[in-house]
Length: 170
Image 1 (cartoon, one colour):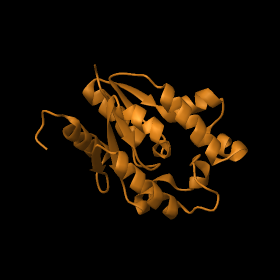
Image 2: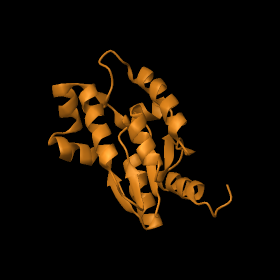
Image 3: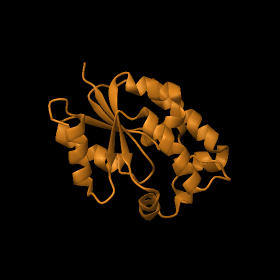
């Protein structure tokens, strides 16, 4: 059975970009679960948050992840995937979870106005508080952590490929 490579991390950490690079490099397919969520809901992530609230987005995300049954894929999850223990257990059952770890200032630099990103957070929660809350979850579920600060996306991809290859010396 071919195992998946699952990317977790904050918005702006490179899950989609590095995911596509890793999929090409490893000859795997690529799945962006944010796109699956939008397809399922018929709306953008931001529209879901605006219209129904962040909990609705997390619920739809959990349902989409639990239905996902793929092999030999690089899977880019939404930043809030880690709020569902059931979904993370489902993904880990047939894959290696890679946490793309970037510091808060890099998140801010990369995503700019996060109010437009469809980020699942409580209305009273700052990005800094969200970052701290999620960091603990990302760390808990990660099989591999790759620090992306100061690296190009190609370098992050290279680090992921090295770390996830059981034949390479780590």
